[in-house]
Length: 197
Image 1: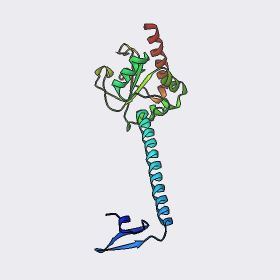
Image 2: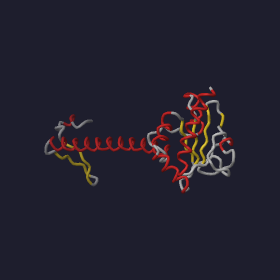
Image 3: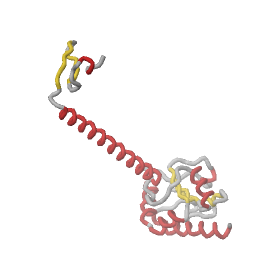
Image 4: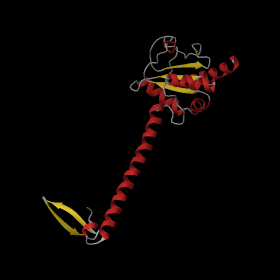
């Protein structure tokens, strides 16, 4: 049985109060229209807020991959992803091992970001990966597990152990003052790669 079948105007609202039923006449449909507008406004605000959260999540993901080493660079998600991108693009993979709480890693990161030549090469000529956890490939630690440590892998999946820094006790480490050596080694990795293929 519907309200209309009782012969009551549809503008009358059926309500329940403390166990007794009563009929209340709506003062006007204008109040219902206002209520509908508020509901629609709340839905619109909710949609806008969730869209903003999605955009923020995307930005956080991008930042988390760069970890502060350069926002304009397309970073690989992990070692396997880096190898796949390297094989597809035929560009060398540059793997930066670092720790967030290491002062030497932090100093190198600042110098790396500040050097426009390195940023340009990293963006255009390399597949880039920075990791805070060791990879499963023991070839990426030819002289031990220390940070910061930077190694190059060519598209034939060969770790370039011949491209080293200037320290004899840690061959693949660089400091902020070694940024020019790193730039030279990046150029060397590109030249050797092209001459060997």
